[in-house]
Image: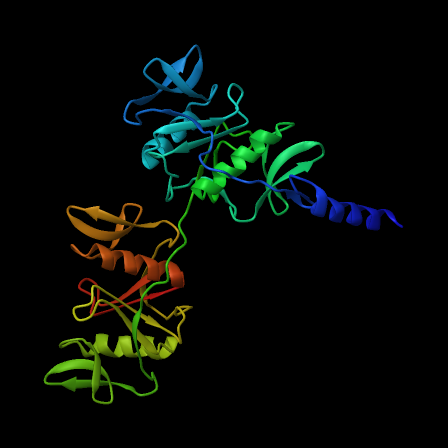
Amino acid sequence: MNKKMKSTLACMIVLVLAIPTIFCDGVEVKCTPPLNEDCISFNPGNIQVKQIKGRWKIVEGSHWMFDFGSDEGEAREAYNIIKHYRMNQSCFVGRPNASFQYLLVSGKAPVGGFPGEDCVSFNPNTIKVKKINNRWKIVDGNHMMFDFGKKKKEAKLAYCIIKKYGFNRSCFVGRPNPSFSYLKKVKAEQPCTEDCISFNPGNIQVKQINGRWKIVEGSHWMFDFGSDEGEAREAYNIIKHYGMNQSCFVRRPNASFQYLLVSGKAPVGGFPGEDCLSFNPNTIKVKKINNRWKIVDGNHWMFDFGKKKKEAELAYCIIKKYGFNRSCFVGRSGASFQYLRK
């Protein structure tokens, strides 16, 4: 019997006989609530960044929480992250000299995102506790996430904590050798509900109807340009150029947001002389500004939805889905025709 066969057989025997069951690829962990968690509550409104004896720290009153050595920048970044998520519990496995730390928001995982944060995604459903080179680790596939040395019990407890809160992002300030780390979760995006009308770009025409220039398909008018024939013809040429064949809306009638697609995909490329603004779909946000809901990219607001928060969120979802990164116009300001492309 060769070495490989012996190893496989040994593994199979352990699968059948051993308690707890040792798998070839990890150790079975039974998470029985309540978990033995060790958390200290704090008020994120009271924390400060202070230099104490030459070292930058985040403190609450006279109690120091996190130490950043000589790096003030990392201390301030961690401070901003804590404030952003409203983290108010600092938790440990294995104090003193904790092998695992995490932060919570009133007993729940931090959720969402922070601009520019450095995170690694993982699947909490596929993590395992493994002994690798005589050290206990939490791994996700071939990726080593947390190292507990010889502390098997602490590895198993940390595993159960990750499962409990559904953490799926491991985040850092100052890699390599991060001065601050935290776990959070990002909720799976729900599919965007879309309202689209298909048309044949080969059948569209520019027509004057009751003194107003329109783009029509048969008896159905699609876009109205008022008295401006030139803008109507420019928009017509753009539609034909990209082969746009779906006109889509957020909340008809009186749509707050419109876009065009090409057989279910974003228009791609360029049109001579078109008037477009570039933006980054990865950094856009939905924000309430002066009591109005807007989609913004940095300090630049792009779309205004008034009091319609749900419509702003749906439009945000649509932009992300198609990866639009150009907002284009015919006839600014007060554009008579607008479209998104990438």
